[in-house]
Image (cartoon, rainbow, N blue to C red; front, side, top):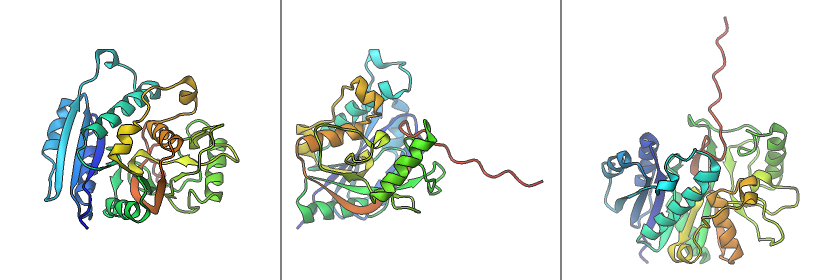
Length: 285
């Protein structure tokens, strides 16, 4: 049976080197079906040539899609309050632009392992699920493995809290202790509460699937787009677009199945985690 084509949606703005790395990892996929790489460019015409001139191969089609910012968004601070709603709108624009039955995502600062799309589709076919996801390998910005025993999205605000969440996630098998492997997970929804991993409490379900980990039927995304409005509670809980997407999928009872494989190379340092590469030890002298 022929493999369904897959669209990979990548958002980018003024990060050509990272975009090239992300695009290289899509080009290196061992998936034997057709791949369409939709590059949604956030009001940055200089990035269009980066997408247009990237190396390609048979079976891969690159679709640059420049989106201008509305006047009311020009000059807004680079803060979550403004960034997250705009990202949600651009992710939805990317899914609408895609022309294939399945949509995956890849943030421009991350990479896929070569078997990422193949193992996602294998899981989708075997399970019949309309949404599947992988796990991640957590990396510092320089590519070294993130082995700190601190939850990455909490460490910038409270080290004790970051250690608490990390240990809880290890105990639940979400973070594989002693490794940099984070196995994203979507527990059954409890409608009385929704707390993402950044503020998770003992006894809470685990709601954690990164945007770059997904493979979802496009018709599901058309029926259940990422919500583009954020409440004050959302901002307080650091609800990123991937949290909002997971929430809407679970609330609408879309079946979700994991591959159980960490096939995304996830580089820390983005807007949700604010982590820098550790400084090298000072030379003895």
